[in-house]
Structures are given as C-alpha cells and as structure tokens.
Image 1 (cartoon, rainbow, N blue to C red):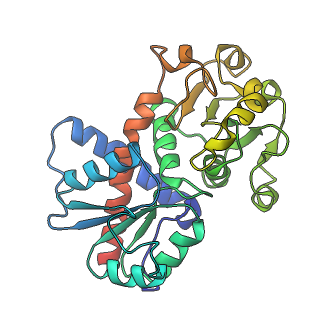
Image 2 (image 1 turned 90 degrees about the vertical axis):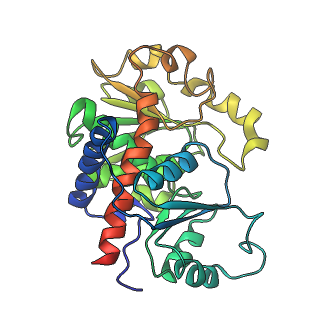
Length: 305
C-alpha cells in the first residue's frame, strides 16, 4: 500500500513527471481527434466519490474512463455510507479492494489524504477546499499547446486565494514560473504556502500592478462552493478584481487568460472576454478530459508495475 502512487497535489509528481503527463495528454487529444482506439484498460473500474457537485470533473472523468475501455462508478453521499459514520480509513480499505483507481471530490483535504493512506489503488484529488491539481494539468496543457514552455513566464492570479490559487502556487514551483496574486486584503492564500514559495510568488493587492506584463492572467469565482452566503459581500469587495479587456491591456502583448469554470459572467470575468473568438477557456475545459486520461493511464500503469 505504501508504494501506491497518488495525485493529491502537484507536488506528488516531479516536474519531469508532470511534463510527461501533459505531453501524453496532448498526444491523447490528437489520438482521440483522429478516432484512435484508446481502450488500454478494459474491465478497469474508476470509483468516483463526490461530496461536492460537479459538471466538468464528473463528465471528464467518466468519459475519460470510457475512452480507456473501463467503467466509472459514481458515488454520492446519498448512495453510500460515506459521511454516515464509517471512518474514511475503512472506506479507503474497502473501496480500493474492489476498484482500480479512485477519484475524490470533497471538502477537507485531510479526507483525501486519509483515504489515500489506506487505499491499495491510486487516489486522485478531484478538488478539495485546499487544492484542485487536475485543473492545473488542464491549464498547463492549454498553455503548452498555445505557447510552449511556461518556465520563466509571468502569471497573474486575480481573485480569491482559494484552492485554485493555491494550486497555482504549487504550479509556479513545479513548472518554474513567477506568480503574482491579486486579491483583496484578507483573502490571501495559506500563509505557510506563500512563505515556502516566496522566491517566485508575491501578493499585490492592486490588480493592475499584478497584471502588468503578465503572460497569463487567470481567475475563478469569487465565492466557492460552501461560501454562497458570502456572495453579496464578496461581490462588493472583489468588484475591482474583474478580468476584462481593461485589465488585459496592461498585460504582456499576446497574453492569454483562463478561467476554470463555471463562471459568473460580469463578475470575476467580463462576458466580452468569455465570448471572444480567440478565448481559450473552452479549450481549457476540454483539456480536463485529455490531461486526466493521461493521469489515469500513468497511475494505473504505475500501480501494475
């Protein structure tokens, strides 16, 4: 069990391994477009444990496992004993004895850590309150398809210091880029994460200063799942932090912008940018499928070695 590889944050893989997964994702995207048979794992079962609702994550993992020749089993709290008294550790032991790989989308990051510690098969973090590493694989794949290596580039995160922001901090470390975080005072990401990456990550409360000469500008909703009650208050605080054509005008020439979706048009990002003909946001969303197929392939093969 101790030798099983998991993907709970970007730090679980070396920079070279992450690069290989993304290049494989690009290759699998091409194969899929050409109609190639990718069913390398017939009979394999993906267990999907979702305590949080989802569109892109569920569709991309279920479709991805079907493309790989396997079956995806969706488990919500309504359908299982999870969160009803059975310890996470026991669920990890039992579920992993019956499936080949597990995806978990939940609240506390400790839940995926505890499950993985008792799982005999690979566990993928499909979002916790602290990290969303699968989205970063898709974002980095999208960047590489359009611009090549992101090493040495300047990235600007605009908005809340949430799980996406914290995954961008890990990405700055693993993919070797500079990250400037533009957020209202009091909405910074985890202080220890900032401290351990202070050589390449900085906070700038003025979004226009943060976005100056940025090669990539990226954002997310202002109120994440579970924070809906704060939506109105946050909307006022975050109003100056919209990603729009005015903000992009101070970024580097040819800068790209991203959003992990779902988006609140007219809040964290303008509808004009969302619908622009050169927007890569929809491609970024599609790349969840391809990057995650490459990730699942990598983990399943590693567990069989």
